[in-house]
Length: 232
Image 1 (cartoon, rainbow, N blue to C red):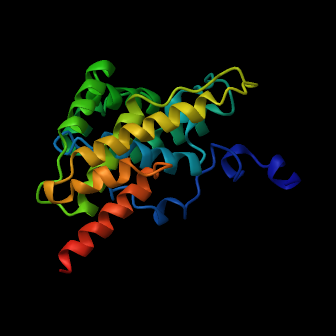
Image 2 (image 1 turned 180 degrees about the horizontal axis):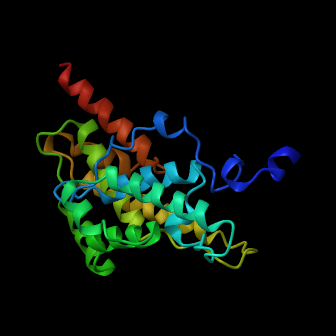
Image 3 (image 1 turned 30 degrees about the vertical axis):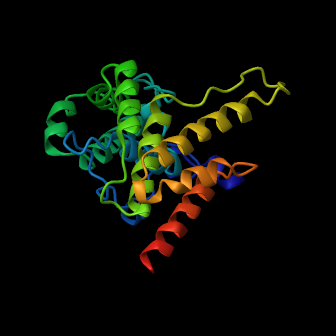
């Protein structure tokens, strides 16, 4: 540990300026390509966020690692890493999006430009996702596939409208737990309301249970009912 502290930032594995030549090659940045047609901003963002956090480069997109003065010995390492992060972002998006954000001078600016392209108005986006959730129906999907679509939609909503948190630091009112339980109840209702008629009886079965099952347990119960029906 003492040795790493004496290393220059570019060669210190604990520094955000360090670039591991092997780490990048072990992560497929093109596994999820950001695209307007796919409207897949949230899964793309979560994946890139995880990659940048593990590689200690998150500060380049959230603005916490500001550009040093030109006279600083960190200026060149910062520029190199910032360019690398921009490259990572560029290769993980469609050509159409690349053309729209490629002129961004920093990774932080590029990250913000991408968010604006997909979320020009936050309230409108929340409305659109909530409306999509309300209209979701199982249709021809299996319970597995339908549940996946429902949870994906709620994951997207959680990105735009996260569960509020108590900021006092010493609160004993358990407000966070109560709000999370309320959100899960909404998710359970949405999942059950969209089931096909052949499985609608499970809504009554589940809602009469005491205590109510978690969302995942409700899904497993419905999946088992579907399996029983298909085996007859």
